[in-house]
Amino acid sequence: MPPITHLLWQLIRYAQRLYWVDTLLWLFILGLPAVPGLIIREFFDTLTGESRFGASPWVWIGLLLAVGVARVVAIFVGRITKTQHRFLISGLVRHNLLHELLKRPGAELATGGADGQNASPGEILSYFRDDAAQIEDVVVGTNEIFGAGVFAVGSVALLISVNPTMTLLVFLPLCAIALLAHQAEHRLKRYRRASRQATQQVTGLIGELFTAVQAVKVAGAEAQMLEELEERCDRRRDLMVRDQVFTAILNSGFENIVSIGTGLILLVASQSLGTQGDLTVGDFALFVYYLSFVTYFLAFLGGFIATIKQSEVSFERMGKLVGAWEGERVGGWESRRVGAWERGQVDDTSTHEITESQPSTLPPTHPLIYPSTHPPTLPPPHPLTHPHPLYLKPILSSGPALPSMVTTIASEPLNELRVEGLTYCYPGGGGISDISFTLTQGSLTVITGRVGAGKTTLLRVLLGLLPRQSGVLYWNGQPILDPATFLVPPRAAYTPQIPQLFSASLRENLLLGLSDTVGQEQLDRAIATAVFDRDLAAMPEGLDTLIGTRGFRLSGGQKQRAAAARMLLRQPALMVFDDLSSALDVETEQRLWEQIFTPSTHPPLPPTCLVVSHRPSVLNRASQILFLENGRIQS
Ligand SMILES: Nc1ncnc2c1ncn2[C@@H]1O[C@H](COP(=O)(O)OP(=O)(O)OP(=O)(O)O)[C@@H](O)[C@H]1O
Image (tube, rainbow, N blue to C red):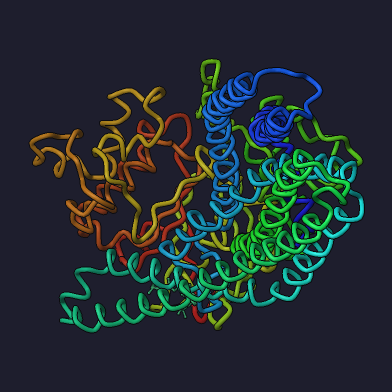
């Protein structure tokens, strides 16, 4: 992991203008209380007849009130800028976390689970909520500590002018704070990691319980599951209390060190007061007042150091979740930048091998992405702190226009897709090994074999949903560097065994972002080809039917046919189906294949199909059959 200062600096640079405006405001807010110190001295010196100005005491009281009002106004404005800045920072971190998670191969779960294994969606929530909030706190805290630091330094200078020897004593509590923070670091991080993991275990279980309500009820396991949840909540409570109490003890330790130090300094200062001493009553009041600035800063600094240590844990956790700390520069974020570029490319260069040795082909950074463009000599921003636009409305102007979501990947006819030596093994065993075959334009290739033979795995590795360990894919003779970003509509589309639908209308599920480019006729044709027309006719609200969370109002077969219609709507050159047998009976499946291979259905060329199936009717139609056994093709 890069040093925390490096990561924080990148986040500070993200919204520099707002950061410095906010810093100035906080300097003002923190600095205004310094003015009353001077006023108080003059007030007391006026009372004792030692003032140089000879003004009435009421003048000083009036000034004191004016400073108070100015401070209230500054705090009000400062809160607005602070809130905006907070949202920007945590928004960026959350955006980057999501962005990195989405870049993972689609069928591969993220690491970073509380048990050291894969993290479930419920567990991942805690990263988005707690760890992002922690980083937000530390970044916005830097300008407060900066403001407090500036005035502490100024105050020390003033104190030195009053009494240099006494001022030196201020450094004693500073040393004690640094020592205490250093001693506590290890425990602080350990407690924080443990409490975060315990939170993850609770959110993870809640997530799983919500998705498996039916299974829990069928198994009559409600009591056991609640007991498990209660246990995890108890454990979380204990660990959270330990974490919070330790942080509170540490903070009170810092404050007590500072208070004891202040007491000692004042004791020494009081010796210099009076007729024999060299301090006037006004000087003493001034000394006491400015000393409080320094001591406030010292206690604040101690707490801030603790927050930085806890933020290191948050960065460390998030980095592990997205695999950002593994092989960072070489295989990690740099190469993924190239992948991201490849995904966004519209011209035919994306069919060519793209490597890191071609950095000059990277597009220039968008001005919205990174206002102060990175000099080439600086290391690139880290994936978690990488500057991306968030399109939030600025305080004083209207919000920026959102970018177009329409992807413009050129439609390319597929003449031939060649697969050579494709291999992928799951960590616990199983997978596919050394798979080679060729798909030619307009052909139907059927993958068959026993359960667990590796059919689904083969489709997933081919489409880049799982990362291949070896092997090469060639699209019309050109190697595909990143299948996950290349084999997407309109080049290829996939209907999985268990399709994902969303809690929206049927129409929205089918179009899924294509609303501007697809006409009703095309929609009807896709629905008919997927043999979903009869189902639709039986729905009173037709395409406007709301299908519920993950499509729970549809049968398993309807979900798969709806997903097939969604795929057909994209008119992909390569169609990949994973076992439609639960969606279609023999007769309707015949209809589907006939429609797909009818030339008028898919102008200008019939698609190329890769299908997992056991059905004799499909096998009879096949141009090629791949029989899989133990992850290998049997000839
Ligand atoms: N996520 C996973 N993690 C670990 N092993 C897995 C995972 N998914 C599948 N496997 C294993 O890989 C092997 C191949 O699984 P795969 O799902 O590809 O088989 P399949 O031929 O599609 O089976 P089916 O006909 O039941 O769908 C199996 O032994 C399975 O246990």
